[in-house]
Image 1 (cartoon, rainbow, N blue to C red):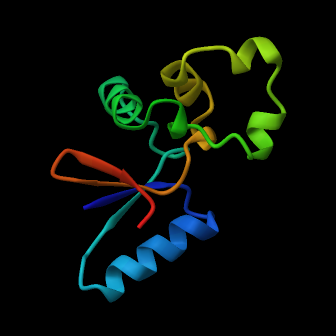
Image 2 (image 1 turned 180 degrees about the horizontal axis):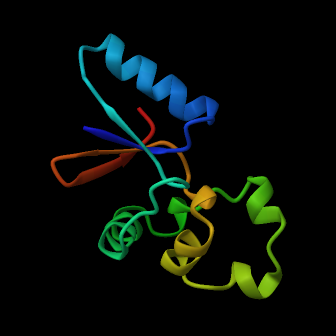
Length: 98
């Protein structure tokens, strides 16, 4: 089980804590430090579509209208902090939050 997010994100830390309390041993993948591979970005976009992007983030608000109109996978490649966190991956299945 992997938790994709940011190590300093409150929601990511809460998800890690909750999963550990449930007896899981999740591995945190900080998407800033370890960018997602193209295949993984595509799998996340396939699973969540536009919901993969956190549109209330500071990063999103700082983007130009042209950048906001780009494909989701490209946005996640250039701005990994836009990922709506946390994303939990287990056995190739992705889900958001707990």
